[in-house]
Length: 147
Image (cartoon, rainbow, N blue to C red; front, side, top):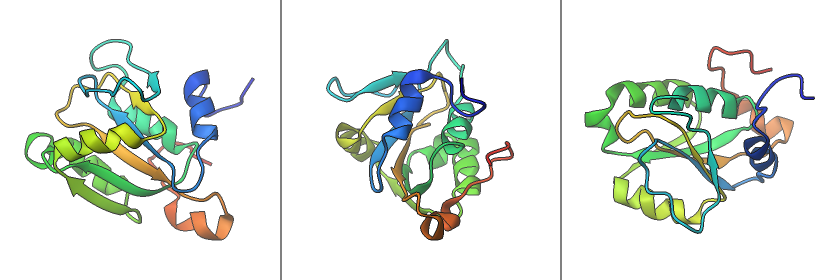
C-alpha cells in the first residue's frame, strides 16, 4: 500500500501516466464533461471534495508548468481565482473565455470531477517534466506536506 499521496486508484493511475506537456482538467460539479474524454469522478456530494482539496492532492503527485482558467472566474469566484494565483506563482497562467475552456477540455488526457460548487472552478493543467533541473521551478507548496 502507498505510504502517502493520492490513494484513489483511477486518479493515481492517470497522474502516473502523465508525460511532459500532457494536459488534464480539474473541474467543478457542473462542468460539461465531453463524452469521449476519460472521467475520474471524485465527487461524493455537492461541495465534497472541494477544488482545493482535489488540487492539493494532485499537486502532491505532479509538476505543473501551465495553467488555464476561465476569465469569468474573476467576477464570480474571486476567492477561487485568488487561491489559484497564490499557488501557481511560477507557472504560465492563462485566462480564456469559459467556452474556450470547454473546447480545450475535448483534447485533454483526462478530467477529474470534484464536488466543487464555486462558479467556474475549472483548472486546465499542463504537466511539466520530472527532470530535477527542470521541475524545481514548478514545485508548489500548498501548505500540505508535499515532499
